[in-house]
Image (cartoon, rainbow, N blue to C red; front, side):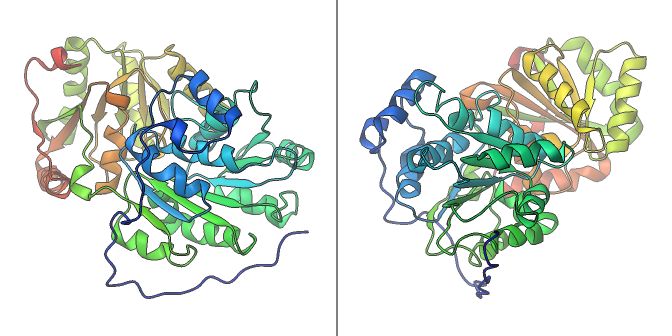
Length: 411
């Protein structure tokens, strides 16, 4: 039977400033964090040697059961942080859902469950590494077979990763039993708590046990999002980086002045002729633009793949698989791809359209040069986009220069 709905506390946080909590301990090695032996073996077998800055600070509070707000730039091991915390506290003898992970997109939810590239809740399924710990994981997402969800959940899953709508549906149908849930993780929390997902998250939260630990992880956490966290977090440990440190190091950012929309296509074709690209992602602001640009590029004999939210789930999965394996080099997409989908080989991001808000900019360009790899982001800027570009520069305390002639040498 589903748990009784719980009350959400309203608090006025209008004057609160958030920064890293003073009592956060920095633990420089995995050996000293206090992890169980089988998990430690799994971590080293996976190839990890030293915890990243966010892992040094956040894993211990998560293990202690504290509510945590963790912010770090893309590619710093945010997902590995909560994966390790999850595996430390799971009781694999109890075959019931103990950890619930909510993600804003189906792709991110599946990647967390399977482990895609280096964005790892393969750390919950693979880093448990099969050999070291036996953990049942399931991705519970819209656009897939409902019967499969019901069958898997009835069998018993330690960790459920999913999108808020489908997860709430499964709770409402009582296929996902919440009585043993100890931890709720909100991945890409800024997007999750924005208007579109906020109500669905609250719906899910109301059915969780009263003492459920809440972990919030994201690259950007605007102040208004942090205010909302007070409704379902208790004295959270805050591990935040200041906003102007968020621009991704190792990513060279440029703009190309295209003056008018009609000139963008020629500019893109010219870039294709001059750049030797390993893999690239091209962002457009609308699904219609993705379809239009894909068609135009193919007409010009360029090989591209494309993906957006209107495509059937099976088709999106196939495109992701091809791109991740390197079978396709260039992906044209909307912001459905911008959050946390890790493909290691991506060295170039082109913003065919500048994003509609400042937070999305860092998510988009974070696709290139992850984990210290160099990368290049190129922004196509019309005359009426210059103000938006300057706003992004100011917001992230960064500089976006005009693209040099030798840009191919930088990729």
